[in-house]
Length: 457
Image 1 (cartoon, rainbow, N blue to C red):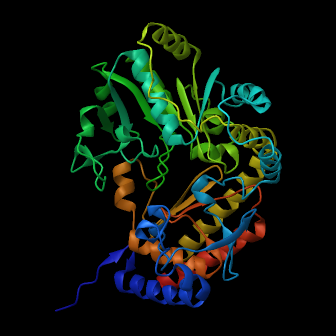
Image 2: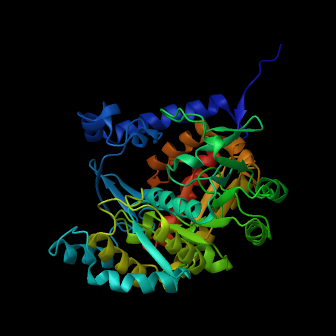
Image 3: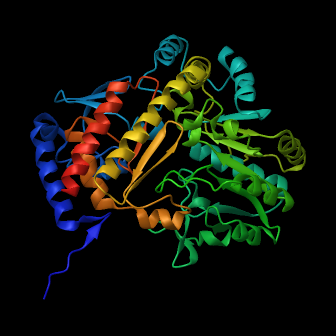
């Protein structure tokens, strides 16, 4: 009887395991200092790391960073890595962009937080209006916070309880968005810790790009807000069908439902985000991660109509804590870093450079995939590029979940690290920053080519 072999992404499971074991050995050999200091975990931290997702990196132990500049990370063993992860978008404009570093140094001598605005705040309000088109803004510390607060506003002004998300969505750790379609039915996202509520009681979920399902979910007029990314990015990347966003806007307006666009990842598209480039018209807008050049900060904006209704709501509601806002939000360090980022870093010139190199990366990875006959594809939104170990393009979150290949992706990731390249540990995401060079892009393509050749041999 012929032996059966399992495969993932067209690669035999035994070959994947062999590559991963070999690359893990090489990783450890190159990092004796890191192995001694972090190989068994860091003392005092639960799970041996300061944040649990640091153990999600597929390397044998986390890389212990000595310093990072521009688009390069150096670990304590002296290994230099071309960084295409860039803090999973938090450092999308490079590590310590000089204008931001100068702003931080300047503000550090003036106080870090005092629950009052600084002069930088006077500039930021108009900058946000000009950049993203909405007239009224608030500052938060994370995109999760911003999304949570914006959804409170949506419920307040509509008087409706439910929200709608797309399967495979990513909006930080907002509880209501932790819903997935499992075996054809809405369910709490598998893996949630300590969640005793049925989140589907107040959250509807449909597949991305499925307009009939969206229309059916909105017809009862009980949804306060649809919250979505313009492109699904935290699964395997899913681009919108032509006309999807225009129809989404029409359907939400017809149902009296607000539309929240979360640009935290798709700000890679351009200075005004995906919204600016493609003329989307959200009622609410959220941007976190890179908006302050790496300093924790986020912004959320609302249309004039939403602001008018929210102001009226506030005049009639019971006085007291709104459940929105955190003490360290809207601090002067955020103002300083955000102003420098908006004025001097998120420029048309920088985005043009980022887009040019992202196109080169897309073409180079696609050529390598084709050359070795792999059933994979590449997706891109502006400066954000991803290779997906399955045929494409993908149309929804269900397809994206099926396309995810954890063991294969982990093996590729470590192999790339050993060749001097760091990509995101989640779904093979790569970012181009203003500091990224053509030589770094070429090295990534060459490293990917070498790993693809080994897997396809």
